Length: 237
Image: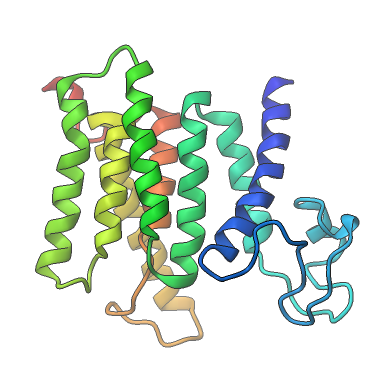
C-alpha cells in the first residue's frame, strides 16, 4: 500500500515537474494556471488530472483538438515510478534530474542553476550513507573529467559541458559502482534509441544529428540505483 501511495504522489509531483521543465527560463510564471499551448485555453480541474486526463481526452485539447504531447503522461508515470522505487533520500535530487531532462530534450542545454542545485544536494546525500568509500567520493570528479574530456576533444559536438556537470552530480550521488554503471547504461540506451530513431524516423537523422544526452544519464542513474548495478565490478578493486 505504501508503494502505491508513493507512486500516486509521485505522479502528482511529476505533473508539477512537467510545468517546471516547460516554463523554466521561458518568462512564464510558475504559479499561473496551465493552458493549451495551441489555442491558449485555460485548463479546468478535470483536464489537469495526471495521466487520467490524457487518457479521457484521448490525448487532445478539449477545445481545439490539438494533440497533447506524450511527454506529460510519460514524465508523470516516470516520476511515480521513481518515488515508488528509490530510497527517500534520493528523491529530491531525482526531481531536479527530471526537470533537467525535460529542459534538455526541448532546448538541448542543461541550465546551470538546476545542475548546480543537483550537485549541492549530491554532496549532502552521501553524508547519510554508511558505506561510502573514498573511491565513491572520487566518482563525481572522475565522471566530470571523462565527460569534460569528450566535450573538449569533440569541441562540444559529441557532448555538452552541462553533461559533465551532470556527471559530477551523478557520481557524487551514487558513488563509484552505481555511478559508473549509470554512465555505461546511458551510452547503451542512448546508442540503441539513436540507431532505432535513425532507422524508423521519417525525419532525416544521421550519426551527426544532435541528441540530448541528459535524459539517458538520468534514466541510467535510476536503473543503476534500483537494480544496485556494478557493471564495471568496481567493488572488487
